[in-house]
Length: 163
Length: 298
Image (cartoon, rainbow over all chains, first blue to last red; front, top):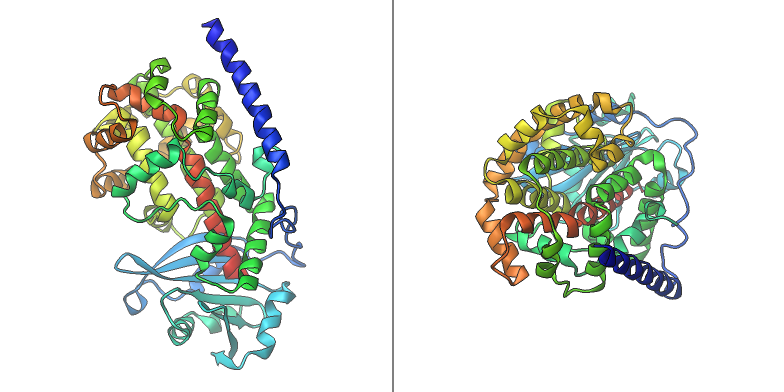
């Protein structure tokens, strides 16, 4: 149907022009603008392979929780802790060796797990810095700081300190 | 700036709050109750993932998430491109999608007059290609979590939130609605009959192949067969456990179309053209993933 084709083309180009005009006029500054074109600085040394971090997580079945790995990237591994199918916490290990800003928050740490500094971040996170290199975190919207600390203690912190 | 170069917060915030896609997704709430909310605001997504209220912490997490996404080596951008390609039908659908975005009263029933249903064999190949795309996007966005194939299958089977909704929409709209209860058998025979010619003639698949590391069309059939075999049990379980059957999906779709006279195969073909369920939920999934990682890394 040539007529339909033509109408379609005209309508489409007209609508596109309208959309472009509208979006060009309505671009308001946003709190995210500064990050929009930025990337993180490259690490001084290559980050440790994600798969090497898996074995230091607390074991599947600990305290009746199931542990499901959900993300694995260079220098970062994430797992979900679940009970009866419901998510209870997010567990992460990341290679923070060359991220000074990340490590700075441990300078004032008052608490320790396995002799490594422990801090809380926001209201839902507890974090340990192992050997000034690896950051372990338990994040949960239902567990309090004590429960999160108890979970952190079940990671293989001494093993990770040797990596 | 093309769509694929946009930062993740813009991609998320440009998703429609109401569209044909969101209406179709909302009707699948009975399949995955409470799993999916249509979050189209980046700050809201940061708050939902972290549960944090402190604005400086939210800023820190959001900025790091955006920067993680911006680095192409992290794979998140490729995941979004694949999701976008899976819904890209070009031509006719382009107009429909535009109409959809501009008007919540898009006349789907009238649109169906111009739709041609696909043969089962074509639909089966299309569905398999979408499954391969989903698995590739999953790997770009999550890596290969765990140490074994079992860990990988567990990660996929544990789909939650937007991921769960996307799997539900794929099963409902791309498999069960057009192909019926024996969709797995039809997919299996569709795969068995695949040739390199059929694949190279499939626009979606040839585009996706260009994003796969060291895969060409000659290795494509093997990739499809392996992916399909690894996940077909998960899919069958998901469909059975969540009660996705042709009658219930069709009945609900008719509910939002407001016209009971439409034929099932026309409705299925029409949904394929107007619904962006992969792109819509895919962008939300990737946003959630980078935010979760940023929160873990800061």
